[in-house]
Image 1 (cartoon, rainbow, N blue to C red):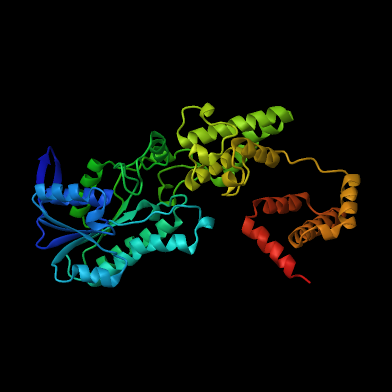
Image 2: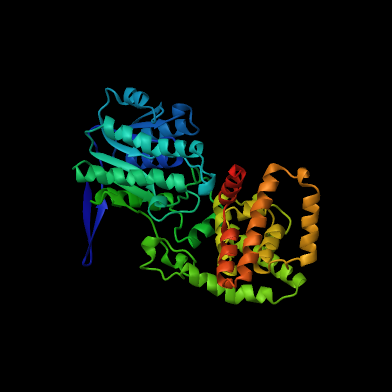
Length: 449
């Protein structure tokens, strides 16, 4: 139910009371967002709530939640149930008049795509996808079917490939139900600032990074108001929340859906800008000064990613993991350094070079590659290898075969006058190769008779 209020010439529709005939089921009901949703539904007039979670009444805060709901005039039952198990879920809802569903449950296991194993993907999909499908099939007659999705499936967020896929299913399920005349609403929430739950307690640095990403965290008050507005609308899939377009300005990468609003530099243009600016300045410096400048830039960028006030807070020899870096902030630091230097850097950069000093050395080697040895030094090295090939492991011999073959090919190409640009392109491809690419090449060499 809603009430219309006239303010000048503008008519505002304000959600009023809500009294469903049956019970409202909330998955993840004892979690931070589930509990927030349940309290809000009770305040809106819901008189019967069924809250499902793995721990049920044993979950932290469950007793206080039940007391709050009773005080608001709602009968609330908190039940332990694995919603990914169709038989357990069917047994729980059997005999109950379920009129509405709010599927809030979810699991996070963030990491860069190369680190996502089946064991890290399956639980994330199960909590969102499997449970949603069971609810869709078990409860055909509903007044409302509300899915808590994520902006990760709409705009894309670093390190959340598994979570994005899970929530994309929720968005698709809502549209699937909508075109068939069934109630459906998928809410692509951004980050919440509710002090608990999957996002945990946000630090000042977390809030600053979220603001820079253009998606400031949603407070409890803002979120419940947005929920009411979405429930009063007709769209089956919406993105509730604020999008700070200015937060994306000047970033090397802008989500595709916002490119009509934000003029972000193209990746190639950003790389050229880095090459002709900071990178050229660094190349012109003496070696000692170059190392110092690169280290200070790494510390400054790391401090910006973590939300520190100054680069001094980032110790030169302290591991990034001890500073608070995770897979998401590691990717952000890689992106920032890549934009500054114009160098293509791997997603595992921070983990391969775990301190600011080590990372600065890597950047220095990328910007000013070490001088090549003389012919005498190369020949001396080959003599050494020829004298003791049995001391090398099979993988070392294979890797040497690859490198020597590439060197011979380059010498032959130089002799025939190959274009230097092609040669540089091959070098760039090798530098940009992932670990999987390199191991695949070595494996192919091992298989060569």
